[in-house]
Image (cartoon, rainbow, N blue to C red):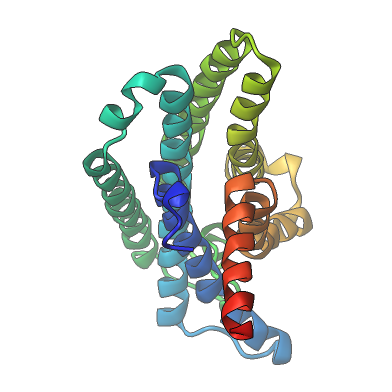
Length: 262
């Protein structure tokens, strides 16, 4: 499928990074969670917990920024199609992707440094930052303030950018005269909108909504969805709702079956 020229575009470049993030999510959390299911009395080591927390935050931040980059790509493609290749050049895409990774890991490092200064009074089983802070024996006000500030900067701000981008995309699509043109334009955005809704919706409920709005059990369910099910849904959404991906997959399977017959 790498030989498919239709998939060598900025959108699929960002999508490949999104796939890497989703695989990293699973590799970071699933193995230890399976161990805990088999032996509920065996906690994660302190070093392992800190590593898992750092990577969880880093990948979550990266995914958020990548989704913003993808929304900007769709905005340029639909609202400024004649300038698309100039604005979204491969150099620009590479810089945006690299900046997303670097900034995300630096922000996760800030959270980790603030966590390491705290003493802990209990064992670690699932190392998501809010769960880790509940096990501390000291005041976590500074951590909570930094988390809220980071959420505003990394969740609310990007979500507003995405909403503004899609508002302008919608206005542009409605101006298209042909029904086929409008349908095609909508189809290029539908998968991304589904992923954006799932990611930002669950993340904002977890980290921005008041604690009274979601008790501890509900928070655990959201954490599981955010960590396990969401990364599995992304490939399904983008493959099942994307005609180019399905077409490339069919052609690849046909070539494989033909080569076996020959």
